[in-house]
Image (cartoon, rainbow, N blue to C red; front, side, top):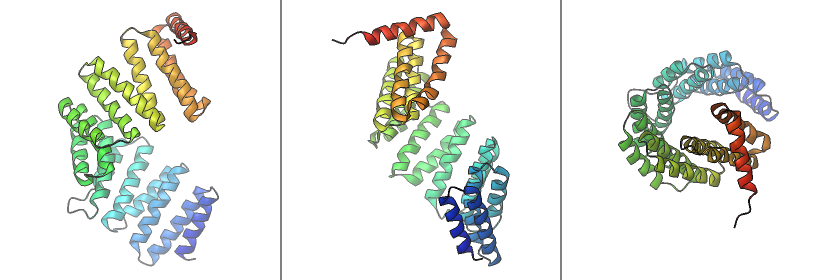
Length: 308
């Protein structure tokens, strides 16, 4: 059977909702390419198969396919895709150190034929380094990525990552400068929402409550404009925490109660509940049942009062 026919069968399996069979057909097609000496074609199909094997929760098979793709000795770009896939397999198995190591291996030391692809790997790497608390390494990765992507929409998002990494590395002034560059380069509400969340983090680090509250409110408004649930919830939770810290228990409850309704409108009532209810339970645990009930009752009374 030809590789093309096997790939066609894989596509048909995907269309039928059977990614496991699709992955198996891609592995078979990769074998045909290998027999003909087409290492690039073999590596490409093995990497695609690995992704599908991750989807169907076969991480060991996914790792084997991606490692075989890496070992083909194909060109830099093709092997990079395999290394990124190996990093994703490691990350999905809860092994961020191995994931980080594979991303470094995806970055050749010599001239890179695909600087944009390299930059995207650097962004993944920066996220892992920052999550591990290695903010200086995250800053280096982001700075190189920004240089490669400069002038594109992607560069704006990477500048947000860079700003967060600089803050983590203890440079709030530089973080603010980079953030300002990013915010003035976009009118995308989703990007602006993320940017205001970074501004919130900077303000909190600098103990500037006024700016923190303004940033949280702006993040929430932009996230709502974008219909972006995750930054919306982050902003609502931040507003609740800020109100709680100021002793405004009713305001803290109100922030999350309104988020419940809004996220329910965006994503469905059950999803909205699943996202917000744990945060309300956390407030009740911190305040105690009686204080929580009083804040809830005060909010409900306020909500029922007619507005003038």
